[in-house]
Length: 304
Picture 1 (cartoon, rainbow, N blue to C red):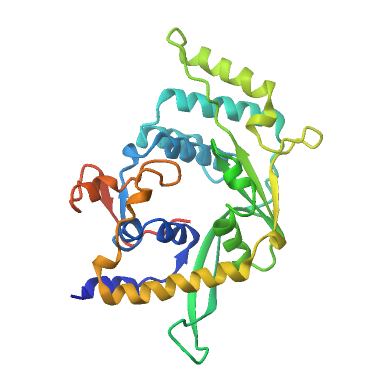
Picture 2: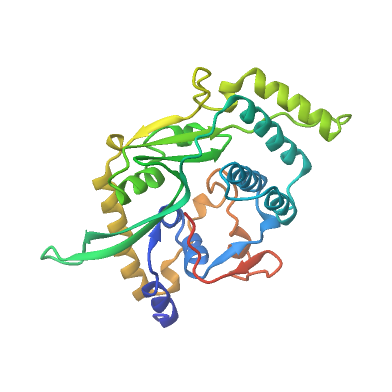
């Protein structure tokens, strides 16, 4: 039986983002819970990798005038970030301030969006349908943009092919962008020793980072005090990417006629969602029972 509320929720969706696209292909149930029903894991229950990434983003926002150190403190408290991860970020930032000259002549967290005419795959006469796609650039400059990542897997973002969905989408939305600089920072893998306090551990991290900056700041250039990997518009197949968005619209149109069952679980990805266990696995394992201690429900959630 078709569930009318699901049909209505899909029809009310205003736009799609690159992160929604990735989630849709990864697991239909994940997409449903996150982007149609609007559930998210409570901040304190997120993985350490997500937490430290959020902290890094907030510290970067301080440099570009988008946040204060009080905001950084709030992130640490709200996300319940472990002390040793806080120390890692402090050590990284101490070295970055010493070695890297930031270009602050930018617009931070710039929203870009476009209405794309895509083929209606149910039509035989070439009818076009409109799809609204939206993204947020970390830092926008006149003809390029910068994306900042704290990651243990920099190769996932440093090559065009794996970066196609995010970076290619941004090129698709703004034809004035010629290239993207991926500022990839690797967190220290050093673990605190039993006898170390936070200051001693931080000093050890700092010495390791500053002794080999190219390992931690990917593409480090000591001549101009910069780092990053450049990806060019010409390296991305934007026509293929646009068609893949059309496929999502086509599939959603069919799925809303079927209802909840069409948002099936992709069991093979449960333990490897972006390198970690899916945050919605507790819901699936509990036969769709949602724990209020673990999850929050919002309106439609759009993450970019």
